[in-house]
Image (cartoon, rainbow, N blue to C red; front, side, top):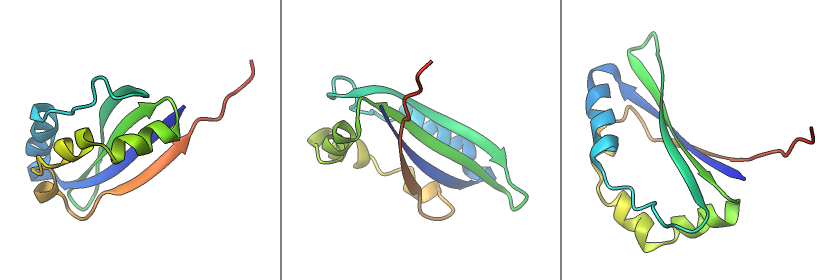
Length: 103
């Protein structure tokens, strides 16, 4: 399993707009091979007036995620462009490979 996360810094006064932009956009993820689930995570408000967020998508494996990033569905989803203008700096991507635990 692979988890793809983008971390966002959003000015607190734009947080409602940021959440609405995610809520209202079309994701184009339904039916993408290897896609499992998506969550937008709201983090704490920082002392500098920045609200932290992370997009969190779960995939069967890293290859499925990378195939999505090269797909027409990805281009369509990211052409909606409203989110970028609400950020206090560029998003930061981190990909996570799940460590399987024997129990």
